[in-house]
Length: 416
Length: 88
Image (cartoon, rainbow over all chains, first blue to last red; front, side, top):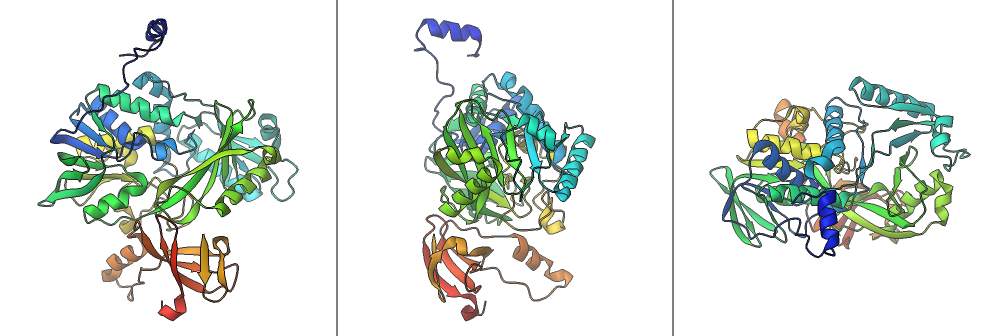
């Protein structure tokens, strides 16, 4: 059923008691053309674009818990395409363009809000870096504006402009950046994929990968064996767990990243703002809570909860930027497990095992990439060819020395 | 998370700085034929879900390098040894 103002009116008249479920809850079939492991944003968008763009509909998405229980529902909902490097920028810009048409495309209200994102700078060197990034973006056809101090003050008057240690000298503004209701992204893609015949199988954990003659032929799961012609992994922080089952080591460590939300406030912050002198980013949700986050805790973790020193560090950064935050109470904090790659950039590629495809290494930039990641991964699975926008995201780039070092910090697993 | 430094006693984890996986062995040679070993050393990780041996330095204390045996699922610390005692 298509959602529209008419379906809304019709269901309102019957007291909203007759809305059909947004997706089925099928039992797994014995085999599929494609099995996707991971019912998060990337897995679901991959299934959606496989069905819609490539007409491959005999597909299952296996999710070990409930749909969208992982990082798709744990992030700080920011979308943007303010990347510097040629391997990254066109990919993320394509993703932003998909976000712009996404709700009409999958007929679901994901509350895509292009409220703008501003990355502040606090020194001459940071201004140079911001100008360089902005110029690189504009050369790629992406919008970017360099704001001076007064320009920032006009849009965000409540920042600490008197901070002697970290003076706000300006910011790089991308007006097309913004936020999206992250759960609705999972639901929208799930509904879109399901309506095209994809089986979404929840509470189905993969416990083994069956390989015959160097080819992935199926997975052992908590709901029994499921065969497949192609196996696609999109399991974020649990990626190495899965590739270990196939005897494959990855340039990835799993780390915990925390996020926070405050009590609800009246409209206060109408865009996304990031602090340049600490790692802190914040927006205000439509419910009124301030949603914010900072650095990963920094040690290997699968715990989905972090420790207090990082909580303190993040909030110190926030209060240094917005002194008014000190009076606001934090309502909740939570953690998600990030697949931190060794150069801070993702991997969308085939593997040395035939029929086994890999989508991981998103560090904590995966949410904004959800549409393009699914698009390029579906292209790879369907055609066997790397999509040109993901040409830099090859698994062998580490061995070749072709790492994509967006941050310029070298090979280590705690990059963003 | 508390880390029991063999020199300073039990301290809060924020006194320490993590380097990472302590099981990686630096390759001895640097010839072209050693590149696979270097690739493995620099980039590849076991990334276990469970016990993990990792280097931490007590940067806010005695500055000793330590090998911490810690659970990545629960954050429980099983044991701490001075790296020099392991010849690591």
